[in-house]
Image (cartoon, rainbow, N blue to C red; front, top):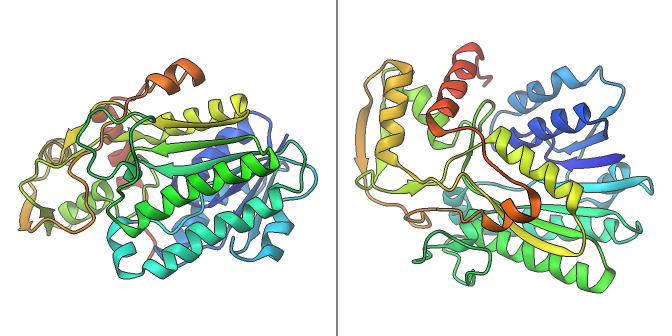
Length: 317
């Protein structure tokens, strides 16, 4: 089975490539290795796969049709689209870039996929589409028409584009809303990784608000398992939450890092930031019943796995 993973060098993408290869897929990773964070880190994520005869890396931007057609060929059976310009706060500073990568890039991909009969499309969406939803936990049937950042808006737009292409061209499509993924290889700009690095260096950590903000932290292996189940069951059009369904406050996160790192956090209090939601909380009833999705890693065990990787792995500049 030939599977293309866009953003294959990234945090989630590299873990997924490894899992698919273990399952016997022929995997092509497409990644432009942009400078959102150190390209060397993303390249290192894939270094162990280079010798696998079932693995192929293509460097290229998803916005360029020529790059897409080097990766997506008539033999392609599955495309897992994880490439995106990520981050809520940076999207406020560069909204047009986010629109170009996340919306136009998705459409360029779908233009290629529609030419291949029966090719499945898995779209990596985000819990950010729920905005500041007052109802918890967040269910796939909830209204998602009020995103509060350009990043969230581009992810919601991506879902709608996917539905449109499914309607017009019959592409089997599944949209997966990821809830705050963490674990080894996590991006350095995300809270767990960023806080751990600052705490190890004896520097203060920026805490926006009073620390009561909650996130539904979901361990990367559980997310990858959910993607694998979605690939197996992809038919028609569907949307699923992939989360841990157990929100953790920012204060609880800091306490867990203190305990695991053996260091006291120096906290720098800052105002709440535009675009940040108050909490995320996944209702995974649908994913559980239809995909067999069942998270296995509790938060404290996941933090321990992350810290073990973090201390063993120097981060390239």
